[in-house]
Amino acid sequence: MSKSHHAGVSVLALCVALSVSSSQAGAQTAEAFYKGKQITMLVGSGAGGGYDAYARVFARHASKHMVGNPQFIAKNVPAAGGIAAANQIATSPADGLTIAAHTNGIAMDPLFGNAAARYDAQKFGWIGSMGKLQNICMSWHTSAVKTIEQARQTEITVAGAGATSNSVIVPKMMNQLLGTKFKVIAGYEPGQGDTIAVESGEVEGVCGLAWSTIKASRSQWLEPGKINVLVQMAMEKLPDLPNVPSALELITDPAKKQVLELILIRQEMGRPFSTPPGVPADRLAALRQGFDATLKDPEFLVEAAKVQLEIDPLTGDQIEKLLAKAYSAPADVVKQAAILIDPAAAAAK
Image (tube, rainbow, N blue to C red):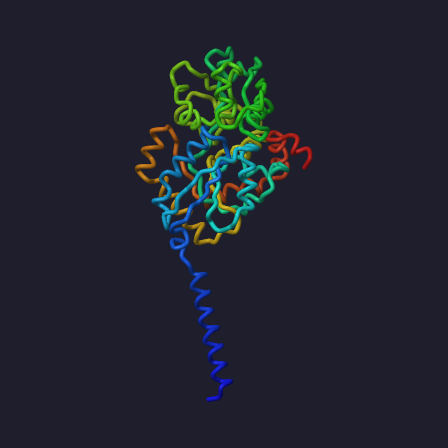
């Protein structure tokens, strides 16, 4: 056998060995990848609020349900009503080591023309949602406005955070759809700024606050006579508030109701988690499996109940279907919803 033939065989063997080695590296399981790793969880809200409470309770239990048992480390990114966290996750490495606990509206901000939302929400890897977000409008017990009908007759001041936050969007939306007279005092710190403003008497109430947030971070408000719940905004009424009117009940105009239903899709996905676009399918599947298992963990549910967290999960697939429905809505309905959500962004679109 010639030397050249021997050399050819050696090169071929080396190529085969390299190919096998590369194939084995590429075939690394999700469990092997996550073993000994740390997952950074961006929380799109300030510390101490409802989103933060949900995310941190989840993080305390998630490791034992994830393949490879990676540790979850929370990092608050509260700017711009959660859009800053969404923008950051959109450009994070697609390796499955960074996820985001989003505010509910970020997935539809691009649809409604928010120029600050520099991402395509339908390309995110949706992991799931911990619960629906059923917003309410409420007044403090010292306010003269104690019913939604009175809010249609008398101006009431309500605290709001940033321009894209629910506490700013929802009262303006109610003014347009229901004829209420909410006067928004915006600029309060995301998280607890609006609720502190209510307690201190700076404002009379908040409109666009999640009922689950009150239960999680302001449970003392549930004492009889402490607050007046004026109206609730959700696809279905809250079991806790059977006698409080829903916005959908009060709107009789079919066109307005269609617009409100599109807006309420933002709330159905409630407290969603995602990866950046392009995370390998097996790692996204592992994150989804770990997420779903965590939300069924008896120890997690005990802690969630102790701090008044309402767990009403959606799967990643369910979030994808909600977004597909929203993004396929008629253009005129989207435009009208966008005007209510963010008039300036809608005008510039």
